Length: 303
Image (cartoon, rainbow, N blue to C red; front, side, top):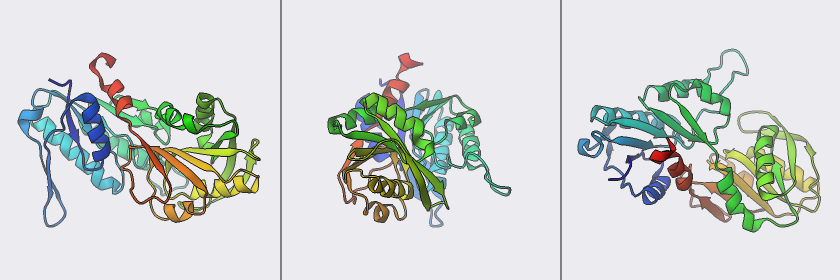
């Protein structure tokens, strides 16, 4: 018998297949349907989870609320079917950017999502590259915060040359860029950014030497692409070669992202399967599976 029963939510089929293959755990045969009003109805075969350690995999990608609710419904179904224990793997945690209030009248969305997950009766929660690691203190269950940087570094290494520079597109990505640059043995630089709104940003300057260099722009997520497009414009103005690699854990690519990145000379996007990979990208997309990272964290002797 495999070390756990694997329940895969509808947001994570690509990663679910990879984790099932790596672990040898065939996904539990979940039945998911909707009532005419859109309400979710879920059935989990009791015989597949009763008395077992259950791992539930679901990223909270758009629509975030729907996928979070689906995860909690799956957990409740497994608990009522007699699961011995339950662990949630949420590679991408939505609302993690709302970890503080910029002004009165705003909610703490990150804390609220952590509270919601705390009601899932999970013995542990696994996440990958949280937007703000400080959110860990908000979870009611022990949180294991994993990093995909070593996996991304392995994927990027064949594309690194003596003109490669790792670039943080804003101050929030500095630690990530510094860590990736160390793994790749390359220098790093940082673009100073100011956010104008949820979608629009402007750059205020650059720290580091980039003239004649080929940049790897690295961030934890690519949402609407505004930050990367603004950083790319700044880098081109400073003399970077038109040969950009984008590296991220969570390639959300929502809203105007493709339109914005169309103006960036993207040679390659390297991301993980924390988010279901898009098939309509106008540039090569190398998807690195998180399955080995998750399996190392989930295996029984890692407890």
